[in-house]
Amino acid sequence: MLKRCLSQPFPCGTLPFRCCFQTTRQLAAVRPFLLSDPGEGIREVQIIQWFVEPGARVEEWDKICEVASDKANVEITSRFDGVIKKLHYEPEDVVQVGQGDVAPEDEAVLAPEPQQAGKEGAPQQPQKAAQKVQETDNDPEARVDVGAQTSSGTDTALATPAVRGVLKELGVNIAEVKGTGRDGRVLKEDVHRFVADRNTTTQGKPRPTASSVEEAQAEKSTNLTPIQSQMFKTMTRSLSIPHFVYADEVDITALSGLRRRLNAHGAGDRLKLSYLHFIVKAVSLALEEFPLLNARIEAGNDQQRPQLIMREKHNIGIAMDTSQGLLVPNIKNVSSRSIGDIASECSRLQALAKESRLSARDMTGGTITVSNVGSIGGTYVAPIIVQSEIAILGLGKARTVPAYNQNDEVVKKEIMNFSWSADHRVVDGATIARMAQRVKDFVEEPGLMVTRLR
Picture 1: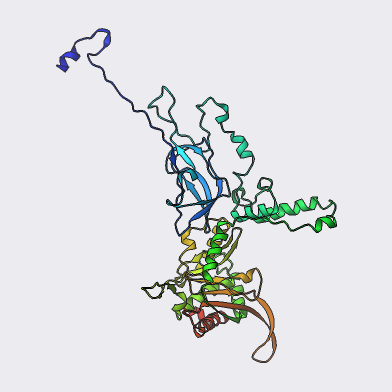
Picture 2: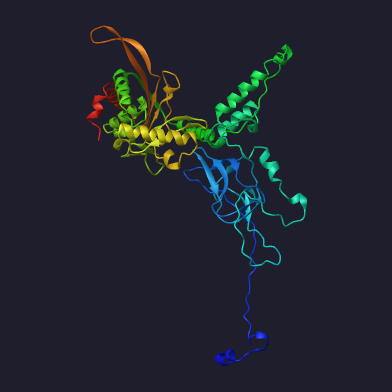
Protein backbone atom coordinates (compact mmCIF):
# COMPACT_ATOMS: atom_id res chain seq x y z
CA MET A 1 0.00 0.00 0.00
CA LEU A 2 2.78 2.44 0.90
CA LYS A 3 4.55 1.71 -2.42
CA ARG A 4 1.36 2.35 -4.43
CA CYS A 5 0.71 5.63 -2.64
CA LEU A 6 4.19 6.94 -3.22
CA SER A 7 4.10 6.00 -6.93
CA GLN A 8 1.08 8.24 -7.59
CA PRO A 9 1.42 12.02 -7.80
CA PHE A 10 -0.27 14.05 -5.10
CA PRO A 11 -1.66 17.52 -5.61
CA CYS A 12 0.52 20.42 -4.54
CA GLY A 13 3.40 18.03 -3.85
CA THR A 14 1.91 16.96 -0.52
CA LEU A 15 2.00 13.54 1.11
CA PRO A 16 -1.02 11.71 2.51
CA PHE A 17 0.55 11.84 6.02
CA ARG A 18 2.49 14.41 8.10
CA CYS A 19 5.54 13.90 10.32
CA CYS A 20 5.07 15.76 13.59
CA PHE A 21 7.93 16.53 15.99
CA GLN A 22 7.36 17.55 19.58
CA THR A 23 9.83 19.56 21.62
CA THR A 24 10.10 19.56 25.38
CA ARG A 25 10.53 22.84 27.23
CA GLN A 26 13.74 22.99 29.26
CA LEU A 27 13.06 23.36 32.97
CA ALA A 28 14.89 26.10 34.82
CA ALA A 29 15.46 25.64 38.52
CA VAL A 30 17.56 27.40 41.12
CA ARG A 31 20.09 25.00 42.59
CA PRO A 32 22.28 25.72 45.62
CA PHE A 33 26.03 25.43 45.04
CA LEU A 34 27.60 23.64 48.01
CA LEU A 35 31.20 24.51 48.72
CA SER A 36 33.01 21.20 48.44
CA ASP A 37 34.84 19.75 51.43
CA PRO A 38 38.63 19.87 50.78
CA GLY A 39 39.11 16.99 53.23
CA GLU A 40 41.93 16.47 55.74
CA GLY A 41 39.71 17.74 58.57
CA ILE A 42 39.32 21.25 57.10
CA ARG A 43 36.02 22.70 58.31
CA GLU A 44 36.27 26.31 57.16
CA VAL A 45 37.88 28.36 54.40
CA GLN A 46 38.28 32.03 53.63
CA ILE A 47 37.07 33.53 50.36
CA ILE A 48 40.03 35.08 48.54
CA GLN A 49 38.36 36.20 45.33
CA TRP A 50 35.35 35.49 43.10
CA PHE A 51 35.83 34.66 39.44
CA VAL A 52 32.12 35.22 38.70
CA GLU A 53 29.40 37.76 39.43
CA PRO A 54 25.59 37.71 39.56
CA GLY A 55 24.25 37.18 36.06
CA ALA A 56 27.37 35.48 34.72
CA ARG A 57 26.94 32.33 32.65
CA VAL A 58 29.10 29.40 33.81
CA GLU A 59 29.73 25.94 32.44
CA GLU A 60 30.86 22.79 34.16
CA TRP A 61 34.46 23.03 35.46
CA ASP A 62 34.56 26.83 35.14
CA LYS A 63 36.26 28.50 38.10
CA ILE A 64 33.85 29.93 40.68
CA CYS A 65 36.12 31.27 43.42
CA GLU A 66 39.47 30.91 45.15
CA VAL A 67 39.47 29.97 48.84
CA ALA A 68 42.23 29.64 51.42
CA SER A 69 42.33 26.97 54.08
CA ASP A 70 44.91 26.51 56.82
CA LYS A 71 46.92 24.35 54.42
CA ALA A 72 46.75 25.89 50.95
CA ASN A 73 44.75 27.95 48.44
CA VAL A 74 42.21 26.05 46.35
CA GLU A 75 40.18 27.07 43.27
CA ILE A 76 36.55 25.86 43.45
CA THR A 77 34.99 24.91 40.10
CA SER A 78 31.36 24.58 39.03
CA ARG A 79 29.75 21.16 38.95
CA PHE A 80 27.07 22.08 36.39
CA ASP A 81 26.06 24.67 33.79
CA GLY A 82 23.96 27.66 34.76
CA VAL A 83 23.72 31.34 35.62
CA ILE A 84 24.94 32.89 38.85
CA LYS A 85 21.90 34.28 40.68
CA LYS A 86 23.46 35.58 43.90
CA LEU A 87 26.73 35.60 45.88
CA HIS A 88 26.17 35.43 49.63
CA TYR A 89 29.77 36.08 50.68
CA GLU A 90 32.30 38.81 50.14
CA PRO A 91 36.07 38.35 49.75
CA GLU A 92 37.82 37.71 53.11
CA ASP A 93 34.65 36.17 54.61
CA VAL A 94 35.10 32.82 56.38
CA VAL A 95 32.81 30.05 55.10
CA GLN A 96 31.98 26.72 56.74
CA VAL A 97 32.41 23.74 54.40
CA GLY A 98 30.93 20.27 54.37
CA GLN A 99 27.46 18.99 53.51
CA GLY A 100 26.12 19.14 57.02
CA ASP A 101 27.35 22.62 57.90
CA VAL A 102 26.31 24.77 54.93
CA ALA A 103 22.74 25.96 54.40
CA PRO A 104 21.47 26.74 50.88
CA GLU A 105 21.06 30.40 51.71
CA ASP A 106 24.76 30.60 52.56
CA GLU A 107 26.04 29.63 49.14
CA ALA A 108 26.51 30.94 45.65
CA VAL A 109 23.35 29.97 43.76
CA LEU A 110 23.33 28.77 40.14
CA ALA A 111 20.36 28.17 37.83
CA PRO A 112 20.04 27.05 34.19
CA GLU A 113 19.55 30.01 31.86
CA PRO A 114 15.86 30.28 30.82
CA GLN A 115 15.05 30.03 27.09
CA GLN A 116 13.68 33.08 25.32
CA ALA A 117 10.06 32.97 24.21
CA GLY A 118 9.48 31.41 20.78
CA LYS A 119 12.83 29.55 20.82
CA GLU A 120 12.00 26.43 22.77
CA GLY A 121 14.44 23.65 22.06
CA ALA A 122 16.91 25.97 20.34
CA PRO A 123 20.47 24.98 21.18
CA GLN A 124 22.40 27.35 23.45
CA GLN A 125 25.73 28.76 22.36
CA PRO A 126 28.47 28.14 24.96
CA GLN A 127 29.69 31.23 26.76
CA LYS A 128 32.54 31.84 29.21
CA ALA A 129 31.81 32.47 32.87
CA ALA A 130 33.39 35.89 32.72
CA GLN A 131 30.89 37.07 30.06
CA LYS A 132 27.70 38.68 31.29
CA VAL A 133 24.42 37.12 30.15
CA GLN A 134 22.18 39.42 28.12
CA GLU A 135 19.37 40.62 30.39
CA THR A 136 15.86 39.47 29.41
CA ASP A 137 14.23 41.72 31.98
CA ASN A 138 13.48 45.29 30.93
CA ASP A 139 14.05 46.66 34.44
CA PRO A 140 17.31 48.65 34.28
CA GLU A 141 17.82 48.29 38.04
CA ALA A 142 18.12 44.52 37.69
CA ARG A 143 21.21 44.81 35.50
CA VAL A 144 24.68 44.38 36.95
CA ASP A 145 27.29 47.04 36.32
CA VAL A 146 30.34 44.89 35.56
CA GLY A 147 32.70 47.83 35.24
CA ALA A 148 31.75 49.19 38.66
CA GLN A 149 32.55 45.91 40.37
CA THR A 150 35.88 45.28 38.68
CA SER A 151 37.15 48.82 38.94
CA SER A 152 37.16 48.74 42.72
CA GLY A 153 39.88 46.10 42.69
CA THR A 154 38.49 44.32 45.76
CA ASP A 155 37.38 41.23 43.89
CA THR A 156 40.21 41.07 41.37
CA ALA A 157 43.34 41.84 43.40
CA LEU A 158 45.20 38.71 44.48
CA ALA A 159 46.50 38.44 48.03
CA THR A 160 46.71 35.80 50.74
CA PRO A 161 44.68 36.12 53.97
CA ALA A 162 47.84 37.04 55.88
CA VAL A 163 48.57 39.89 53.46
CA ARG A 164 44.96 41.08 53.64
CA GLY A 165 45.31 41.11 57.44
CA VAL A 166 48.38 43.35 57.10
CA LEU A 167 46.42 45.61 54.75
CA LYS A 168 43.65 45.97 57.34
CA GLU A 169 46.11 46.59 60.14
CA LEU A 170 47.93 49.32 58.23
CA GLY A 171 44.78 50.81 56.74
CA VAL A 172 45.83 50.30 53.12
CA ASN A 173 43.48 49.83 50.17
CA ILE A 174 44.66 46.81 48.20
CA ALA A 175 43.68 48.52 44.94
CA GLU A 176 46.39 51.13 45.56
CA VAL A 177 49.18 48.57 45.96
CA LYS A 178 51.04 47.26 42.93
CA GLY A 179 51.59 43.52 43.29
CA THR A 180 54.91 42.01 42.27
CA GLY A 181 54.01 38.36 42.87
CA ARG A 182 52.78 35.81 40.39
CA ASP A 183 49.81 37.03 38.31
CA GLY A 184 50.05 40.40 40.08
CA ARG A 185 49.59 38.91 43.56
CA VAL A 186 50.17 41.44 46.33
CA LEU A 187 52.92 40.35 48.76
CA LYS A 188 53.79 41.55 52.25
CA GLU A 189 56.85 43.29 50.83
CA ASP A 190 54.63 45.24 48.42
CA VAL A 191 52.45 46.45 51.29
CA HIS A 192 55.38 47.53 53.47
CA ARG A 193 57.01 49.25 50.49
CA PHE A 194 53.78 51.14 49.79
CA VAL A 195 53.48 52.20 53.44
CA ALA A 196 57.13 53.33 53.51
CA ASP A 197 56.62 55.44 50.40
CA ARG A 198 53.43 56.89 51.85
CA ASN A 199 55.15 57.76 55.12
CA THR A 200 57.98 59.45 53.23
CA THR A 201 55.54 61.78 51.52
CA THR A 202 53.85 62.66 54.83
CA GLN A 203 56.97 63.43 56.87
CA GLY A 204 56.40 67.16 56.40
CA LYS A 205 53.15 67.04 58.38
CA PRO A 206 53.14 68.68 61.87
CA ARG A 207 53.95 66.47 64.84
CA PRO A 208 51.11 65.37 67.14
CA THR A 209 50.43 67.60 70.12
CA ALA A 210 50.82 66.52 73.75
CA SER A 211 47.07 66.15 74.13
CA SER A 212 46.86 63.73 71.22
CA VAL A 213 49.72 61.63 72.63
CA GLU A 214 47.88 61.20 75.93
CA GLU A 215 44.72 59.92 74.26
CA ALA A 216 43.47 56.45 75.22
CA GLN A 217 44.76 53.42 73.34
CA ALA A 218 42.66 52.56 70.29
CA GLU A 219 41.88 48.86 69.82
CA LYS A 220 40.01 46.94 67.17
CA SER A 221 39.25 43.26 66.73
CA THR A 222 40.12 41.25 63.62
CA ASN A 223 39.33 37.67 62.73
CA LEU A 224 42.08 35.07 62.58
CA THR A 225 43.10 33.86 59.15
CA PRO A 226 42.48 30.15 58.40
CA ILE A 227 46.17 29.37 59.02
CA GLN A 228 46.14 31.28 62.31
CA SER A 229 42.94 29.49 63.34
CA GLN A 230 44.47 26.10 62.63
CA MET A 231 47.66 27.08 64.47
CA PHE A 232 45.57 28.16 67.46
CA LYS A 233 43.79 24.79 67.56
CA THR A 234 46.95 22.73 66.96
CA MET A 235 49.04 24.52 69.57
CA THR A 236 46.19 24.39 72.10
CA ARG A 237 46.07 20.61 71.70
CA SER A 238 49.86 20.49 72.04
CA LEU A 239 49.57 21.95 75.55
CA SER A 240 48.46 18.50 76.72
CA ILE A 241 51.83 17.00 75.70
CA PRO A 242 54.55 17.02 78.39
CA HIS A 243 57.69 18.23 76.60
CA PHE A 244 61.17 17.00 77.41
CA VAL A 245 63.63 19.56 76.00
CA TYR A 246 67.23 18.67 75.23
CA ALA A 247 69.80 21.04 73.65
CA ASP A 248 73.42 20.70 72.58
CA GLU A 249 76.07 22.52 70.54
CA VAL A 250 77.11 20.89 67.29
CA ASP A 251 80.38 21.61 65.50
CA ILE A 252 79.51 22.07 61.81
CA THR A 253 83.02 23.10 60.68
CA ALA A 254 83.62 19.89 58.70
CA LEU A 255 80.10 19.97 57.26
CA SER A 256 80.58 23.59 56.20
CA GLY A 257 83.75 22.73 54.31
CA LEU A 258 82.13 19.73 52.61
CA ARG A 259 79.13 21.82 51.65
CA ARG A 260 81.30 24.51 50.04
CA ARG A 261 83.26 21.94 48.04
CA LEU A 262 80.14 20.17 46.79
CA ASN A 263 78.47 23.42 45.77
CA ALA A 264 81.66 24.48 43.96
CA HIS A 265 81.56 21.26 41.91
CA GLY A 266 77.81 21.47 41.25
CA ALA A 267 77.05 18.29 43.20
CA GLY A 268 73.60 19.60 44.02
CA ASP A 269 72.47 19.50 40.37
CA ARG A 270 72.49 23.30 40.09
CA LEU A 271 70.78 23.56 43.50
CA LYS A 272 72.81 25.00 46.34
CA LEU A 273 73.10 22.50 49.16
CA SER A 274 72.36 23.96 52.60
CA TYR A 275 73.02 22.70 56.12
CA LEU A 276 69.35 21.75 56.36
CA HIS A 277 69.60 19.16 53.58
CA PHE A 278 72.43 17.32 55.34
CA ILE A 279 70.73 17.55 58.75
CA VAL A 280 67.47 16.11 57.39
CA LYS A 281 69.40 13.12 56.05
CA ALA A 282 71.26 12.75 59.36
CA VAL A 283 67.95 12.67 61.25
CA SER A 284 66.66 9.95 58.92
CA LEU A 285 69.79 7.84 59.42
CA ALA A 286 69.48 8.19 63.20
CA LEU A 287 65.80 7.20 63.08
CA GLU A 288 66.85 3.78 61.77
CA GLU A 289 68.48 3.19 65.16
CA PHE A 290 65.75 4.92 67.19
CA PRO A 291 62.44 4.15 65.41
CA LEU A 292 60.46 5.20 68.48
CA LEU A 293 61.01 8.85 67.52
CA ASN A 294 59.24 8.19 64.19
CA ALA A 295 56.09 6.78 65.81
CA ARG A 296 52.85 8.38 66.91
CA ILE A 297 50.53 7.85 69.88
CA GLU A 298 47.04 6.45 69.34
CA ALA A 299 45.06 7.82 72.27
CA GLY A 300 42.88 5.23 73.97
CA ASN A 301 39.54 5.48 75.71
CA ASP A 302 37.96 3.86 78.73
CA GLN A 303 37.90 0.45 77.03
CA GLN A 304 41.18 0.68 75.11
CA ARG A 305 44.66 1.55 76.27
CA PRO A 306 46.85 4.07 74.42
CA GLN A 307 49.03 2.50 71.73
CA LEU A 308 52.20 3.35 69.85
CA ILE A 309 51.81 3.26 66.07
CA MET A 310 55.22 2.54 64.54
CA ARG A 311 55.81 4.03 61.11
CA GLU A 312 58.31 2.69 58.60
CA LYS A 313 58.77 5.67 56.27
CA HIS A 314 60.55 8.83 57.40
CA ASN A 315 58.35 11.74 56.25
CA ILE A 316 60.27 14.66 57.70
CA GLY A 317 58.42 17.96 57.97
CA ILE A 318 60.20 21.23 57.13
CA ALA A 319 58.88 24.36 58.84
CA MET A 320 58.61 27.20 56.31
CA ASP A 321 57.98 30.90 56.83
CA THR A 322 55.61 32.14 54.10
CA SER A 323 53.51 35.22 53.45
CA GLN A 324 50.52 33.24 54.75
CA GLY A 325 52.27 32.26 57.96
CA LEU A 326 53.90 29.06 59.19
CA LEU A 327 53.49 26.03 56.91
CA VAL A 328 55.04 22.60 57.51
CA PRO A 329 55.09 20.42 54.38
CA ASN A 330 57.04 17.19 54.59
CA ILE A 331 59.58 15.38 52.44
CA LYS A 332 58.30 11.87 51.84
CA ASN A 333 60.42 8.74 52.44
CA VAL A 334 63.70 10.52 53.23
CA SER A 335 65.45 7.23 53.97
CA SER A 336 65.36 6.32 50.26
CA ARG A 337 66.53 9.73 49.03
CA SER A 338 69.99 11.11 48.44
CA ILE A 339 71.02 14.51 49.77
CA GLY A 340 70.62 15.92 46.26
CA ASP A 341 67.07 14.51 46.08
CA ILE A 342 66.30 16.10 49.44
CA ALA A 343 67.54 19.46 48.14
CA SER A 344 65.37 19.18 45.01
CA GLU A 345 62.25 18.24 46.95
CA CYS A 346 62.82 20.98 49.50
CA SER A 347 63.16 23.50 46.67
CA ARG A 348 59.91 22.26 45.11
CA LEU A 349 58.03 22.59 48.39
CA GLN A 350 59.40 26.08 49.00
CA ALA A 351 58.30 27.23 45.53
CA LEU A 352 54.77 25.85 46.05
CA ALA A 353 54.56 27.36 49.53
CA LYS A 354 55.52 30.79 48.18
CA GLU A 355 52.68 30.57 45.63
CA SER A 356 50.20 29.05 48.14
CA ARG A 357 49.94 25.92 45.98
CA LEU A 358 50.90 23.18 48.43
CA SER A 359 48.70 20.12 48.07
CA ALA A 360 47.05 18.20 50.90
CA ARG A 361 49.52 15.36 50.29
CA ASP A 362 52.45 17.73 50.81
CA MET A 363 50.98 18.94 54.10
CA THR A 364 49.94 15.63 55.67
CA GLY A 365 51.61 12.41 56.75
CA GLY A 366 54.62 13.91 58.57
CA THR A 367 56.37 11.75 61.16
CA ILE A 368 58.96 14.15 62.64
CA THR A 369 59.72 17.84 62.07
CA VAL A 370 62.86 19.94 61.61
CA SER A 371 62.47 23.70 62.20
CA ASN A 372 65.28 25.81 60.78
CA VAL A 373 64.35 28.99 62.65
CA GLY A 374 68.05 29.82 62.85
CA SER A 375 67.94 30.91 59.21
CA ILE A 376 66.05 33.97 60.47
CA GLY A 377 67.94 34.39 63.74
CA GLY A 378 68.24 33.15 67.29
CA THR A 379 70.52 30.67 69.02
CA TYR A 380 68.19 28.67 71.25
CA VAL A 381 64.65 27.45 70.60
CA ALA A 382 62.09 25.34 72.45
CA PRO A 383 60.08 23.76 69.59
CA ILE A 384 56.51 22.55 70.13
CA ILE A 385 55.41 19.02 69.25
CA VAL A 386 52.20 18.44 67.30
CA GLN A 387 49.86 15.64 68.32
CA SER A 388 50.58 13.42 65.31
CA GLU A 389 54.32 13.26 66.14
CA ILE A 390 56.57 12.42 69.08
CA ALA A 391 59.63 14.61 68.49
CA ILE A 392 60.80 17.80 66.80
CA LEU A 393 64.23 19.35 66.18
CA GLY A 394 64.86 23.10 66.19
CA LEU A 395 68.02 24.51 64.60
CA GLY A 396 69.69 27.68 65.83
CA LYS A 397 71.74 30.18 63.87
CA ALA A 398 75.17 29.04 62.64
CA ARG A 399 77.90 31.18 64.16
CA THR A 400 81.69 31.28 64.34
CA VAL A 401 83.30 31.04 67.80
CA PRO A 402 86.87 30.63 69.13
CA ALA A 403 87.63 27.14 70.45
CA TYR A 404 90.56 24.92 71.39
CA ASN A 405 91.69 22.13 69.08
CA GLN A 406 93.43 18.90 70.10
CA ASN A 407 96.75 20.74 70.37
CA ASP A 408 95.31 23.35 72.76
CA GLU A 409 95.47 25.95 70.04
CA VAL A 410 92.75 28.56 69.60
CA VAL A 411 91.01 28.08 66.27
CA LYS A 412 87.80 29.21 64.63
CA LYS A 413 84.88 26.78 64.69
CA GLU A 414 81.39 27.00 63.26
CA ILE A 415 78.77 26.09 65.85
CA MET A 416 75.04 25.47 65.62
CA ASN A 417 72.68 24.74 68.51
CA PHE A 418 70.38 21.74 68.14
CA SER A 419 67.26 21.90 70.39
CA TRP A 420 65.10 18.80 70.69
CA SER A 421 61.62 18.37 72.15
CA ALA A 422 60.15 14.93 72.77
CA ASP A 423 56.87 13.60 74.14
CA HIS A 424 57.86 12.63 77.69
CA ARG A 425 54.87 10.30 78.02
CA VAL A 426 56.63 7.68 75.88
CA VAL A 427 60.18 9.00 75.36
CA ASP A 428 62.59 9.13 78.28
CA GLY A 429 65.48 11.55 78.55
CA ALA A 430 68.14 8.93 77.80
CA THR A 431 66.50 7.97 74.48
CA ILE A 432 66.29 11.53 73.16
CA ALA A 433 69.86 12.19 74.36
CA ARG A 434 71.16 9.16 72.42
CA MET A 435 69.16 10.15 69.35
CA ALA A 436 70.56 13.69 69.53
CA GLN A 437 74.09 12.36 69.96
CA ARG A 438 73.74 10.11 66.92
CA VAL A 439 72.59 13.02 64.76
CA LYS A 440 75.48 15.07 66.14
CA ASP A 441 77.94 12.34 65.13
CA PHE A 442 76.67 12.36 61.54
CA VAL A 443 76.78 16.17 61.30
CA GLU A 444 80.20 16.63 62.91
CA GLU A 445 81.72 13.85 60.80
CA PRO A 446 79.81 13.85 57.47
CA GLY A 447 81.93 10.97 56.20
CA LEU A 448 79.96 8.65 58.50
CA MET A 449 76.88 9.30 56.39
CA VAL A 450 78.62 8.05 53.25
CA THR A 451 78.75 4.49 54.52
CA ARG A 452 75.01 4.58 55.32
CA LEU A 453 73.71 6.14 52.10
CA ARG A 454 71.63 3.90 49.85
